[in-house]
Amino acid sequence: MPEINAINIFNKYFEMVPAVTDELKHEVYKLRYQVYSTENGDKTGFNNFIDHSGEIEFDEYDSHSSHYLIRHRELRTYMATTRLILPNAHNGKKLFPIEKHSQIDDVDLLKLIPRHNLAELSRFCISKEFRRRKNEGHLLITNDIVGSKVIFEQEEKRSSSYLTLALIACGIKMSSENNIHYWYAFMEPALIRIISALGIHFVEIGPLVNHYGLRQPCVIKIDDLLDGVAKKNLNHWNMLTNNGQIRPR
Image (tube, rainbow, N blue to C red):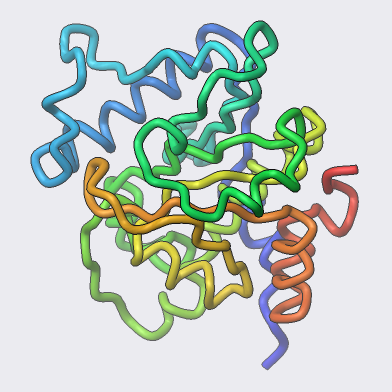
């Protein structure tokens, strides 16, 4: 049986949307509230640190971040989002969240990374509502990134990585647009295992910490990420780079 074309299948049902207007950013913050507070807040402790009055979730880093949404074409509903926290243009020494909330041991590695080419991939989330749609399970990631363990059928397993790949592709788009070549990421152990199976191998730079659940501080060079995926599955590399058209330069 020929391999399913990940780009074509994904684009048939979904689209990646850069959140460049105030209206779209509000959709980002609403979806983050839904995922991190309504769906998972009690498990992660996130609800203890969020303003519930407007049912949106945002923080001090959003003002110097790039944001993407994934929208279901037919329903016109937003189902996933991620952001890339960029270096602060007004304060180049401002710490990233990972630097404030974890213990980084591998400082020698970080000294080799130009800070103006470093960003933090963050708020990587997918709504449970879409992972439960009966007729589209084969298109949707079946891990909610913030701690829920989900059991799914073999047919779903083969293509459950598409949304994970799509969110990473969004990160690569944002990196290409902002001259970013390295990512920080606070990674849950379950997510590390999922993306490792795709050929994506983040470098652990410190011990696990309890930050809205157990998370590992990590870093990766985007070229290394893409090379790892290409060796594992060229079809997935094509999805991440839009057939080689998008990658940091």
